[in-house]
Length: 211
Image (cartoon, rainbow, N blue to C red; front, side, top):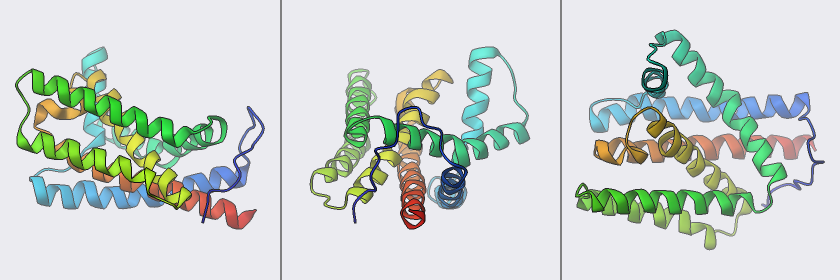
């Protein structure tokens, strides 16, 4: 199965049906993310993934503000259910070869971060294994004959770049959280791939059926 035709007019506004399908995909992906982040990650590492904590870190680091927990959680769910899905719709509809560009962005930024971390004397065998796993995963796009799956996975890896490659440093944390040991970054990598891929796949499947 291949991706649907994305030849939407430039600057077009998504229909109500499309927004609903985006929200459904985002909600299902986020539900799976929550299980991975709060149950499996805590079981493996002893503590969960907490996007609301990243929001608080950004507010503290940039503005010296402490955001109430409920507001942080609300922002997390808003971004997961609508923010990322709408960004996906815009990027996938209006940027040519978008999934290749996103995969390349993740590969080059994570590689640069890993090399810099190694030059600072912080790299371990685990860091190298993490880089090999992430790079090998991204490279599967070149043997993946299922365009929808390939593009959905590319979107998932990009959500990881946005969270830990962009937002984490804004919050005063290390690039891709490599300076914090890398374990949380790896669990976040897996979680974001699952979230983004599920959200994009479900959205595209629903759009196909509606068309």
